[in-house]
Length: 119
Image (cartoon, rainbow, N blue to C red):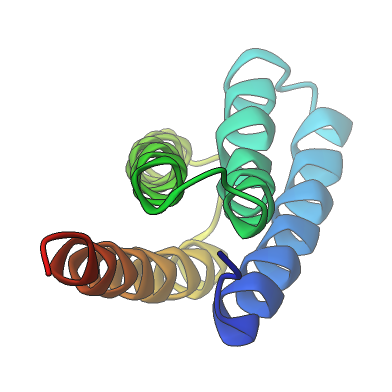
């Protein structure tokens, strides 16, 4: 079960932005929340990659669903980092837009896969 290339490419690009943000945060001596952001933010793309070689449609849906949960967690860490002034508003809005697009794409892919599973 191959995931859509757009989802794969967008999640990889987002992971790069997250790694860059992690570097900035650790330069300002923020280590705990930045590590959580790094973990959840890069997990989104890693799980999408895992879904590419899922053993079944149900496994594919499961991996994308976990990716969706990680994306939602990433939103939380971005909001917290912004709320505590570790991330400025411009960067927060840029990363939030990116992750919200990924969330929309994941929801759509999961719904479509569930429809196909039930046929």
